[in-house]
Image (cartoon, rainbow, N blue to C red; front, side, top):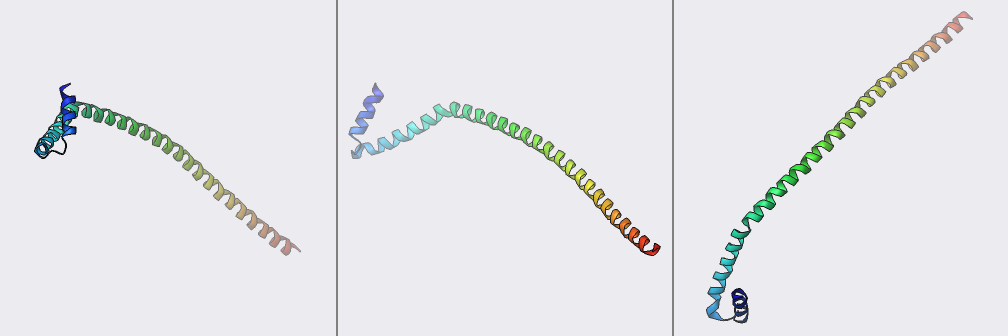
Amino acid sequence: MLSVICLISLFLLRDHPRLLAFQRGATDLVAVTAEVILAPVDGWNRLVQSFQSRAALQDEVFRLQQENRVLKGQTQRLVSLLSENARYKALLNSARDIEDELVAAQITSL
């Protein structure tokens, strides 16, 4: 009740020159008091946020590890497909070489 009366009187007399210093001091006192009173709440909020951010980071690490495993599997599949492709190219080139030899053999046999 007293605080309400003080606030009303400060509001009504807010432009009075004698109260300016008191208003500044009261504002500073309220700010410091609010910081002291809210310090445990702020500390708790920071602690909760650090746990949440740690959990979020752990989830992201797990997701990235899974993605890494998938990409490694795709890389292995790509390597096997590239080697298979190289074998097919070699077979195709050898078939062309054999066809050239067959044509040359047919020409010489005539």
